[in-house]
Image 1 (tube, helix red, strand yellow):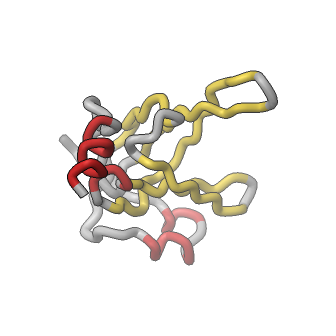
Image 2: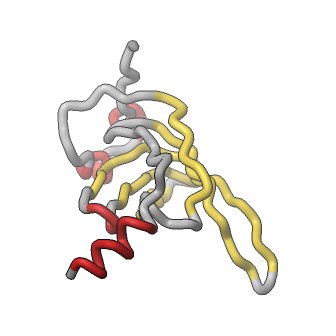
Image 3: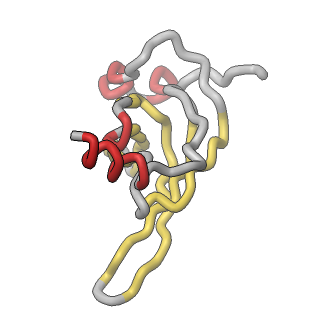
Length: 114
């Protein structure tokens, strides 16, 4: 068990992104197509965060062409190049799954005035 902890501690990112549920973020992800690599941006609202050491993840949701798209990103993955917080959201829930059922203006999150 100690060997497993040691391996997981060595693969943790030192510069963990400071983001909260409700934030509007831009995530830069490495995409591999054949033998080429490129960086693709995914922009949306953080609707949930799952904690737990090396397996920590966050879910980002966006609506493109009327269809909701959600992606789950591991925080400590080497494929996640950067996470940029564009806007902080003011929410009172730990999980924003209720946004899945909403469309239009009711699906927006208020901006937090800092």
